[in-house]
Length: 212
Image 1 (tube, rainbow, N blue to C red):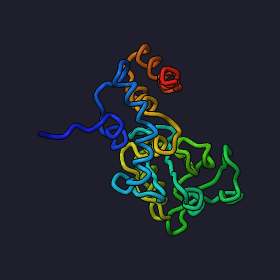
Image 2 (cartoon, one colour):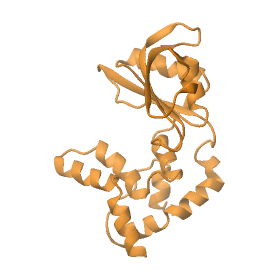
Image 3 (tube, rainbow, N blue to C red):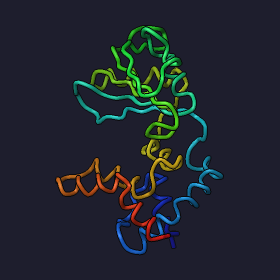
């Protein structure tokens, strides 16, 4: 018989877990958060390459005015700096700052006008250094920016890896990690409100109070 995978491991592996809202199962899942993070810290190479820098297009595919390409990891600022041309290097930038310039390919040719937003660890979505390039939408432009970041040393992120890193770095608990997917997939105002409340951490806080 196939061995059942726990809800937390399913989330960390980007496998959609069965609903765990409410009841003893949610309590048990949240109780295991710290233990799961400890296990993954020891065995993380089985699920992600620890210490590397990842990149991906963060917005939905298709034609749009603006798209976002994200890069996260210990070398995120250096990788972004290698493809960014602006008034000053991103390596000098403080967190929560936005910089206008151009993204260039591996040959130094301009790819697009961009706004580079810098986040310094631990104050980012993933808890790592993180840079988001706001560029023009469209498959060709975003693919070119992504290719430039890959050429500068980042690797393609696995599906859900930014959220996985956020969980492993203690930026969110299991209920919040699941709420990210629920909020993106919400099809009604009621579902959106419920997911947003869960993402705020209220559910985890309530369960934490019950544990005391």
